[in-house]
Image 1 (cartoon, rainbow, N blue to C red):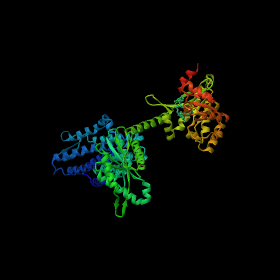
Image 2 (spheres, rainbow, N blue to C red):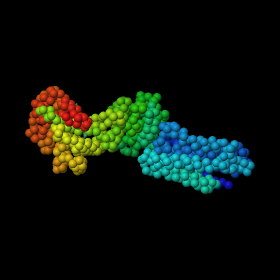
Image 3 (cartoon, rainbow, N blue to C red):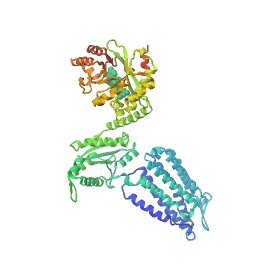
Length: 630
Ligand code: C2E
Ligand code: MG
Ligand code: MG
């Protein structure tokens, strides 16, 4: 009655996959465990499919209870199969069943109910029954299709709804294809139930999953002996929050020079010998290799840093030898306790790489310790990085204004626009904390433009002349200053609000003045659009005054460190510097004026303008208006 010509070869194929799968080291990751579930369940289903079909055909020689047990088990595993394929799809999309226990239980329910019905068949005969003339389908036989179809529908829902969780297109297509093959298998089973063809389709899906996601070699380095950095990342990320592990980082000193001295082949061989040694001597630990002679030994909380490091230290006093090889290598160490302070695997790996590079330069076997504090700072920095990206992308950078006043009478003449961002609790974060991040991740251009645009809008919407504000200073970071289309972009914002460039002064620092040729070209094209420049933070860089002569600034701002130094220890230098600037036709602003005595001292040097807490701290736009609009 049944045709085994597809099912039997499928059994052999699944055995081959199992052998390959088990022949390589695997990390205990959810995706690996779910795949293993598939392999086991799949193997059992195919076996039971063949055996129960054979028994059904030979019902006359087989006892009824054996027939019931074989068929019952077959259906139970058939339902389990539907569930594990779905579970694998969910895992691939990084959905953690542990995080949603209610949903997970609900999702398991159809499979459990169907399994119970299958087991009740000796009494109810709902899915199948064994009668005198052998095996018969029951009234609810189609449950087999409905359950499988239901789980496939769940899978397709996940593939669609969570597609953003998978960044590689190849992965998205592969998991879709695997599920489509399963669906096809189900349809073929419905059309040709006696062919036992569905097993073959399931094997096809398993092979797609294996090739796209599960080949253990994706996680291996050094010809399959130790894990790679992807494995480290996935392991830490998946277990983050639950980890109480310890890690020792080990770096082979001067890896590149060693390669030059011994040759690439020899060093590769040496690294292989080291990894074998680590695997043999630290059995309970997971060993990872992160390029350029850097290893990570990950152990549980009971691992002793001291023991690991002294064992390794001793070993590295001896050469690494094989046939015609004798390598003398030196190493340094890094130690870190992995607790819930770890922000993400990437953050941990970065800290470890930085520490290993530091250790590499030290001539000591004492480990560089990555402290909890450092982890905590890393975590904060990462939170800030994400916040900054979000705030900038949502155009939520805030602008505060700090007045700039005349030195002789303290009357307001202008203001400086200073950026602020707010965290999720509404707490203000000052620019010192985020400007350097924005400069590193390139968001500074967007951020700077937003501040500029908000300043323009503020000028347009308010009669600032009335309150004595003639211009607003906006900061330009060196990265923005380097952009070739700066003039056009800023000019188009001015046009948009219909305001004159007279109303804006752009502050640059000496860092923007590295390339004289570009500086002149950029300032020239900005001047053509009517923009004026102010030199900010004078005294923190290295420029000599004569060099500034060549640049068309209208104002120089003395950095507050310079101002405070002078106030604490007056000398001849600062007053003559101020005079020199005035000879060059620059007006001079002193920053950081905090009280009247400072104002007096700086007034005597000849400064034209002041900015500082004595007059006002930077204020939100509405408060600024309230304060000066009287
Ligand atoms: P800056 O341009 O030199 O701005 C002056 C800084 O000194 C401001 O700090 C201001 O709050 C602070 N300050 C003013 N008067 C006093 C005082 O009397 N005492 C003390 N202790 N501090 C005073 P803030 O707002 O934290 O800004 C720091 C720096 O961040 C700015 O220095 C500027 O370089 C940068 N920055 C701020 N906003 C932006 C922006 O929109 N774009 C760019 N590229 N940089 C910005
Ligand atoms: Mg400034
Ligand atoms: Mg400044």
